[in-house]
Image (cartoon, rainbow, N blue to C red; front, side, top):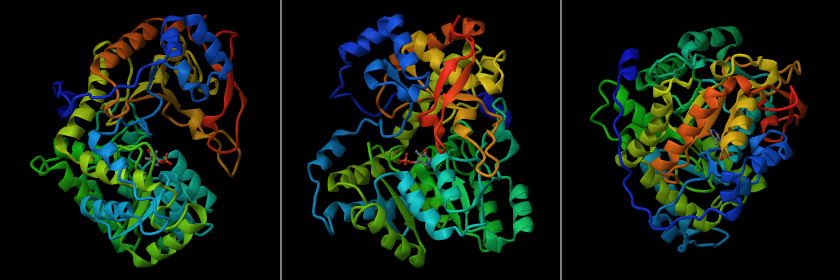
Length: 477
Ligand SMILES: *Cc1c(COP(=O)(O)O)cnc(C)c1O
């Protein structure tokens, strides 16, 4: 099965839209594209952290696919139909209908974005001293589990941590690791299984339906609910359609719905799959959880029929949810990511395989083998990419991993990656060609890139604001 993914031939799938409106780049951005001196000043000022660059200083922005989606004409038309009533907005009911039809959960609590839903869910379900198993981690999900007093436990399969493994379902849960945890702490200490679709930190990698149904059986046996992180649900569904026997003839919409049917609830950042710029929600089938979440959303977000969103934002998300499950949309979206990955693989640049659903991940350990992990190779690579080309990616390695809350020691993840996330419907294949050329050039001069020292960090989610200095005086000597 592994080989079959490796041997797939790349074929282009054009997107199912035409471009009617474009966003012009500013004069500053064009200057940045042409002027290395300006980029050098900018990255130095930003403490070699691409999160601290201003958008005007970025030429091609692959920092994230979060909230950077281009909305459709249909979504923009929906924005004009925002019902801004404080209570009972029409758009809330449209969103509720979309969530019921596409995801299939009974109850909806809207939130301003994904982490707000994670906060509410964690506070309600977790008691101090609990353990929460996860298939790897997502930064905000783990932080909210830990803030609620839980210990995060990784139950992902070993292949997920190996950037060179062609395993087609690196998002799978290792059921033996999960069983061992259940034996060790007891099921009553596990408030839920936290399951992420198309695992971001593993490189945008899916779980299989087979693994999910086995997980369901195991969790049901011990009465442990499965709470899905459905932020990238449709990209996971698309990979199942393409790679898993017995699912080839189903639509992405059917598969997505089937995934949700094996879970008890979901938190979603609408800023990814759902094709909006802001928005999120929590949805579930358990009335008790819903009632508690509804009571809590009023404290932290806003009334339960808007949860921190304008009516127009809820309408755009409702419409985005129907668009996101269209087969041709998902296929073309993932295909564009694979196109960039394909160009880099052909040039033998080390990237995580299989190419993920939302991003291409450069493997900084192999790209910069001369930089030890204590010198933050992924951070150095993301800074060097910007310096040499004006392209912005993001560190996904030791800086993102942060410190262990119990010991204060830095976590040392096996994966040291630079993520190049592709915004949905925002860039063309010409942009991807340009990005590939820039990375191939950087790869040729890789020996000249030096490591970084951290000079400032925050206690939580430090990757957003940390600052660095080149360990050898200059970033690229
Ligand atoms: C982005 C993201 C979140 C958090 O959502 P926000 O809208 O950024 O708060 C949670 N989980 C996953 C998998 C994500 O990609």
